[in-house]
Image (cartoon, rainbow, N blue to C red; front, side, top):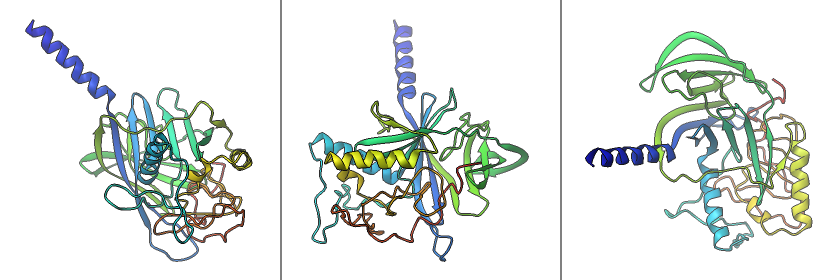
Length: 318
């Protein structure tokens, strides 16, 4: 009887462990402007791993989306306006506002088939595409120490940048920040050759009931090439139908440019790859609070210089 009890306890323990989400936290530094001399912007990004699936998402987007989900459950579909006619998103329990993010999207990965999906939300709607470029890493024999791990160097050209990754073979997870995967170990450090983007692993935590992002059944499936057009099509449909859910999409946009794009690539005007989505008619964002000016009348706000000059992907090719 005692053996059966111990066995049941072990099954319960391991079942609980399997249901937990392993969250790898990265300090993420971004140079938002290659034209003007500015300081690196710092925020946290998460890599949540569970059952051969992973989610890359910024801390700010996770907070915003989880709070949005709660508001929708309470029947709230519109964000109130301040005296300055700005959309005001509710504050966190500690009284602080959710800060703007450079990564206003999420990325899902499947370790079994190595698929990578880039997902952006427009109000309650989603548009996504599956990454069609392979990760061709050049693994070096160079070994170093980082954060109590033995790490190995690997390089790759992707999205117009040359990336250097340091991965830990002892962490048997072939994954990393952003879209990156395919190495025999978890990526703990990642930086491009220009020093514009830097991901540094800081710690791991286990979360029993983590808020998770998934691709909705009614999401618009696109391609990497057609992503911009499909996003604008969804937005125009929502505006035409006067969908109140689109009000949530106007919050916390760090970069607002008419006709903009956040497809993970693109360096030309009107395209925003890897930076927060910039949509038609959203208005100019307040950098400190992340609250965009309301522009429901359709007037186009002036483009911000902040954030749009240095996307994470400079090219939609390799």
